[in-house]
Length: 293
Image 1 (cartoon, rainbow, N blue to C red):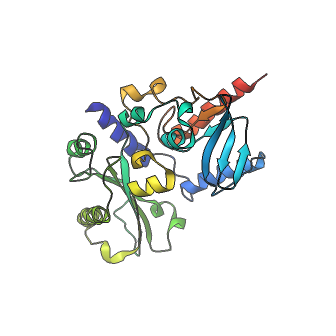
Image 2 (cartoon, rainbow, N blue to C red):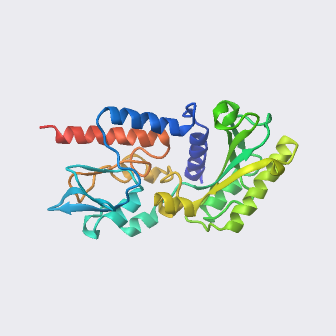
Image 3 (tube, rainbow, N blue to C red):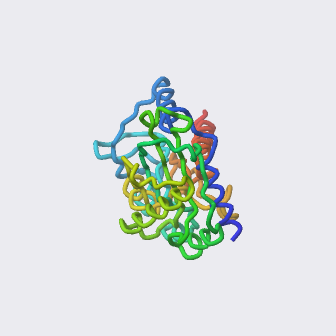
């Protein structure tokens, strides 16, 4: 339907977007980290949060694998569903498990990270393969809640404009296929779709890339769940439907716990790098206004 189509296209646009800095998206994170450290922020990396502690209806800090960190204000930017369902006691959750189960999620993704030992003059930094049916792909994701039978996909060849992302004479390629969040994720499915992508790229480029693959890594639903606690392995948060827009999205301020706030792609304003960054600004402004004497 139309909202589903808009959602799919929105995420394709985010993938294409204007947010690529030289050195890759990681350089954006490094820049933000550097500024934060200069402002006195202390980071504790690779520390698992196990519980948000609440006393008399107010957050008091977070329990972690290395001890308790007291805090007057807690801002959770991890997956919203994970924070509420796994880091808060049930009486402090603003949204029930059934609420989350009823949400329409944006696509998950199957990603292939591929290192090629030759140049690929036929690819640009961004290439969308819309050489199959968009209607069928959308129906497979949103109606059948599965994998697209004949997928559309996006290819990023960053080394075309950023030579530092690959050795000289080689290419750094990322392939992204939108699939349904919560769908089955198996080695067999990943292998099948890698072959589909290689066949389509061969037709487009005029030669087979498979003999030139020197590095290959996959990333899909199981990886998103394990590494990021992403609800149903989603890659882009909630779909941009009319009933999940603006104030109808999960709140940035907890209904049950004072001093607890949320930011990130499952909150306001929505998914993608720019909106997720904006959500942090929205929360920061809210906290400042509420903490002001």
